[in-house]
Image (tube, rainbow, N blue to C red; front, side, top):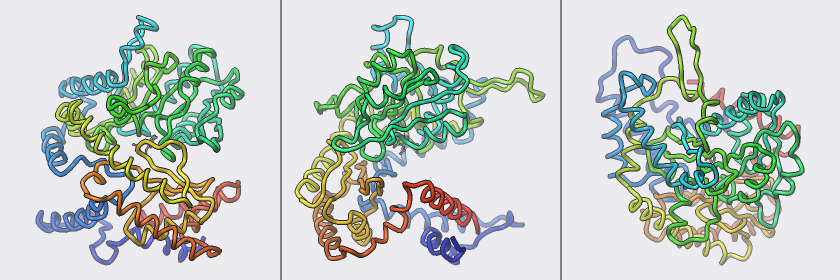
Length: 471
Ligand SMILES: Cc1ncc(COP(=O)(O)O)c(C=O)c1O
């Protein structure tokens, strides 16, 4: 791809070029705080205006101005604190232990004792969903090497599981075996998983729910398989972990997805998504502390003194830990149930809206991620149109589709579900009028899927990163 082509892709992501000064060196003399604050406020204001319309899918797990202000105030108390220094800052392990225990309890940690009284759910806090997943995968690799002598580990995952699993496979030399999902229900087929289990299989993965469709895999069946083969089973609740429990309490029909399943050996749940904490926190949980040991790291004989850390990160800001703790305590079950109900009400109205448009077909039985495609129109034309109305969907591919993940910002905009439905209807009409012409969205989606296509897309994306990092 030529520089000019890459520039065309990247330019829209660099709206500040030419408007605000770029810096290739630390200024000789510091700038005034007012000037700095003015520029930052202007960027923040413009960016906030986009999602405050309620038209942006997922991304902003923002529980309102007052909640955010409160978290920022809490953050300030500990912004300078390093969670790693547990001797100097004992508040950190105190708060993290509380967050881990509260998360474990929400995910029915008590159930593990009924299966084995020696087990007890424990975990660590991490910097986000990806780190939680990466840590769990490293844990299984090291567990299987030590306990089973497995040197060429394999982990089986639905193709819909988050790419953080593949990242872990790449980092730790684990072969990630993908199981395709397909119509009609788009959830992984346990028999297809079973067929891939061999002597090198160390763990299985399932999602509650997955990113593309928000669907919950048949976790009970995967749990049985994990028990039968004495292997690990990670349930990725990064997205659903902090909302599905409340849907269940609200009486919704949610299949069991947590430690009540006897084969579940680890879970990830993101406090920085539906936990409504600040960005940069998540929880990874294990069925017992023996397993968690394989996550830890220590260099006993380093010249700089003994260096130990429970997760991949070194220093982390205590502000994030404190804000997470404060979010859970302030909202309480009552608050989470209230927010979950508000989200579900909007999601239900949007689901009904999609159902009322015959050209669109929903993927599976949606909860809070509404995913759909079409056999009658090019769905990417619909996305092109929705962009013109200020909507920001997430595009899906193989097969083509789009999804909208409902978070709190939608609940702040009265009538958002009606606007969504009406705009979608217009989007379908637009797509019909454009039949036979290429959609703009298809310039990016629609290339991958073959070896050459995947290589071309990767090359393009890496080029975009390079350009984004240029001044
Ligand atoms: C199902 C699922 N797992 C994991 C992740 C990764 O989380 P993070 O972006 O916090 O690293 C996401 C993010 O959207 C997700 O939806």
